[in-house]
Image (cartoon, rainbow, N blue to C red; front, side):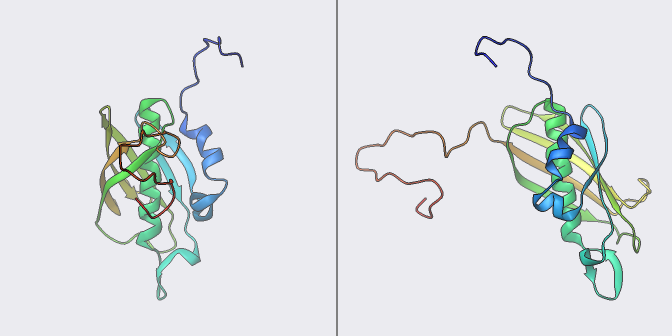
Length: 171
């Protein structure tokens, strides 16, 4: 691609991105699946698996994988809303559990990004096990936009300062 190329950059598409996002890493290990999308929302599925149980005596998905599901759906709803992929960091993700999921049931997480600013995005959503009118949990969150990768930006060193290498515990 030449530097004079003025063709528009394709917008973020959650369905297409999920093909890459869910191939490996934490989301791949969890087995997350794309379920649906709109202009400002994304729905993902966390399939039931015996190794994701919260208690040995109940075949119900643990809360940790459900939080991961909702965090990923949140990020993807932000990118879907902004039509572009750019790093975001979870500042606050409140999860209010209403009830346990049904035994041996998958859980779906549907999150909408309802407001964005230059430096933040706000989301809300529900986790459900097949009935959106009887949610497993409600979520609300705030995400910070990361405008640049601080590891790649050279900061000027002030007189008397000792330079710090990114990735060390010296910060």
